[in-house]
Length: 553
Image (cartoon, rainbow, N blue to C red; front, side):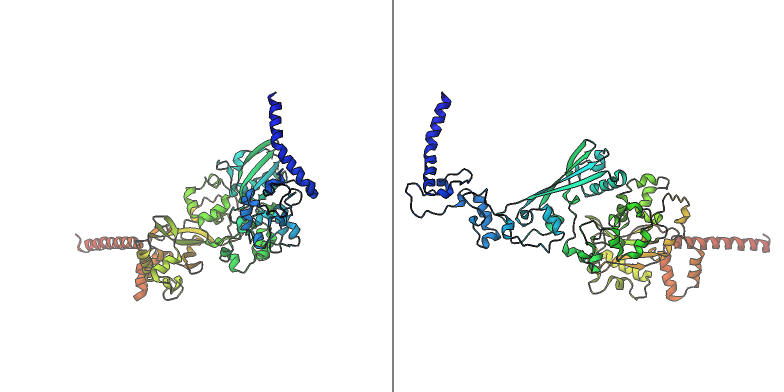
């Protein structure tokens, strides 16, 4: 009984509206199929209270129901061009007759958009042209072989970052082979009412995460399902910031984007070989190149600001460690492996034909930690008028002597906030791209730990210049004369022990040459004084014996 009573009440309440709608259609027959969210005529034409109504009614205000959309539209480029709501929407049947972007913009070629075909296939118009688009990426991997979570998530934080994704791809290519497939699904939504004057820049996706803030990785490996978060930049390649690209080696060399990015496919070695043919001629026959184990871009990021020559030992090591993670374990045969890898890079041994040098970098140890010496530090100490090379090589003879290096570092130490130090390491200064030398267990320590080691004849002091770095050839004896205020983090084997050649040079030199040798000797004076004391004692003993024999006492 209660249900019939409620139905009767509803009918009594809705009857006037139904009657009103029917009365409207009696005159406005063409609106019989009106469908605006089941809204009735009087919901928008609120001034049609009495029938017959006035001949001219007020224009309905969309703001009363669609306030947010109207405000977005008023701030958009479409409003600036004079477009109204009805320009795109048939307000009486909006679901059936709403215009699409291509109805007005059918001939837009997107000629300036890199990889236009790929972007247009994956992205909707509002994904780039809306002011605040939001997107999500779903990456699905099909494997014919089971896999464990630690292969994907090595640090255990339940998220796969860029490095972990690259490691996984390497694992899939080397272990699984052709038994895997990766599909990527990009979804970006935004309000068509909030179209900006300019489309989203390339950096919005390829530098920042302004559109695709989240990505999901789904693994299906023989029925085993793994799902976890993925860094969006793992599948959206990072591009260099345009302002910074000019600082890279390629940018300085005049290499344009289109010179390398010639297709939708990943850059292969043959693209690099167009400019680096001599290097590739060596590399293509090596273990790394055979079978596609490692491509040029696996080790070399063409968008990096630093050149390979400017990388320190630890930075170079990081390139190899991406694939060869257990290097310490494999070098346990080497005495003190951790200590060796503090100063040596992999190619020191694994690329025998590369030229090795001992390189000394100047560092500053301050309250914020240790950092490399910069050109700003040089400018603060000596001004900006001279190049660093002219400051340390005052007489421009391409040779540094103690009288030049000592005052340079003393003045630098007085003006720099922090402790100025010199750190030595053995690096490859002329790379030969053949790293096929493996299982080389050279236990003859004198190969490196001797005065005849090749890198002792190729020493460089690295200092910052106005543009980049410059390598100044130095002698180990000069570095031994460094002022005591400079922290030295290296040991030149044999350079603190005097040789007969040092004594002969000291005795045979005259004038200023002798003064320079005296300064270069450094700690060798301990040995020299010991030698002279030994000779004096020996001479005293000999004289004593002779006198005893002569005088028979």
